[in-house]
Length: 167
Image: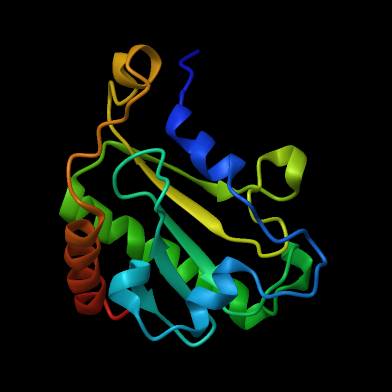
């Protein structure tokens, strides 16, 4: 079994966060309400959900599909929200295939703290493009990751392709 080591994520893990149930809007709610898509790396918006590049990615092109409404569990989503999350996911996979040519994907939710959710109060779906050999010595030996392109450039490319795909 291969293990994906992501030591650069420690900065995110140790950063201050709003405690769940603190009554404050999550980071995802703030991004969803913002108009600055370029600064926030938002690549697509729909009626019920938006898609954003992860600023602490496991791999280049790591996207998250997020409902605008802050909910923690799948059973809290409406049918419209659930459908749009899946529509965004399908189109994001198409866009990533065009832009980055990955050989595979990890797609899923981390629900709850013990499952690895970093923002437990606002569920989000991860789309992580994968390539053969994408885990290498850099994160393990050098405590560094190699993201082959700046996030703003990746976001711009994905934004353009997703617009073509109708997202």
